[in-house]
Image 1 (cartoon, rainbow, N blue to C red):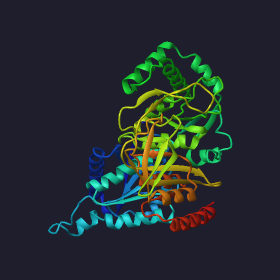
Image 2 (image 1 turned 120 degrees about the vertical axis):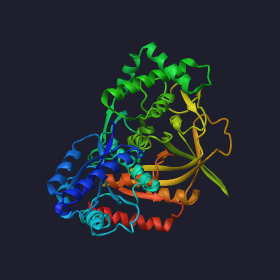
Image 3 (image 1 turned 180 degrees about the vertical axis):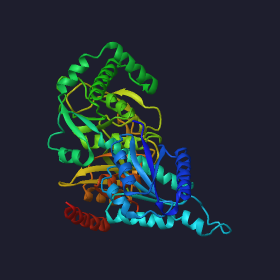
Image 4 (image 1 turned 90 degrees about the horizontal axis):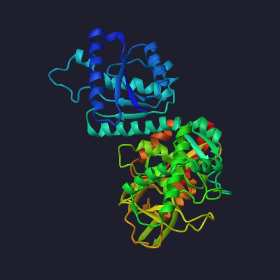
Length: 487
């Protein structure tokens, strides 16, 4: 889907046709120039002057799948009652750009004609009131429209809004159920579909085995050519790698046939399969599909959504699991990994294809990609079901080059410093209910995830360098009260 955003400008008939023509020309110019620097096109739609014009353009936006959101601005004064009928029916993300066409007040030119035309400071406040009065989820971006900082904030919001569009059409393919007796991978699929748009359903592993058996040797050869072009072949056990290629072809065929962009599986349900998918899952994630281990369909969908939100960055959003800690004083780190399935978009160097025993699942040794993660600032995000509502927890982290080579660890791994520090960060994460599975992203920011949560109308918790356990407990207590009242 090629997404775009609509630019809707507010005005009224009071100023006469000449002013309205100028407003329309400037709005079209602004949209065209912004489209050159923003990650998605901005299309000028209308200078809205009546209740009907606003209601009509919002109705059109609601039913246009390519429209990922609207950006509004009031060049002149736009009486806000005329926006009510449109706003109460708006189903797309909404950003209020509080700007003005001119950057400076022209000392010699300013007169009443100039004031009547350039009333954004007046119009945007009236416009903002009605959105506040209607309790609308929105993003307000203020500043000069040609400033790089403003453009970046608009672009970041656009990417979050695309995450909403992807979420609303998300289909997740579960191969079997989630891992037995695990609490955090459970969740209310009906509520999630109503709230986030996700269609989460199960396909039997036997159907996957049938599809694998129908994969041709030519299809396996084609996938092997992909592997050798992207990764270093560090094993002589080519047949094991070919089996992973067969698994990947089959999983992709099944997902594409059903329109699914994410999948999950579990090592407890591999009936008829020789190996748990390793490189098969990793390479599918590299192509933008979401994945969740142990049947974790929530993190699977979130991985796909955050990959879409990070498009145009370095592609680095991936399924992750906290595995173990390094608790030496002054050198506290988390080591993130998984049995097999970490996306190679996180790799600092070219990943290696290796074959090693898994030690779990009672199947043959699977092939997997082994690598170290990149250095840099990142976030980890966890979506949990609190019973009656969803909570999105985001923690700021800083990824480092692993401080030791760990030559006998045959999996992809990422090492990071959690904010505000390891022990306080762990306490805050556990207090908030954060899962052992998360999405690690170098591309998507905490602010974008906050925007996404606001658009989806779910709770958001952010653990930063300044977070304290005391403050977090108070925040969670107040959130609990507020969301229960809201329900």
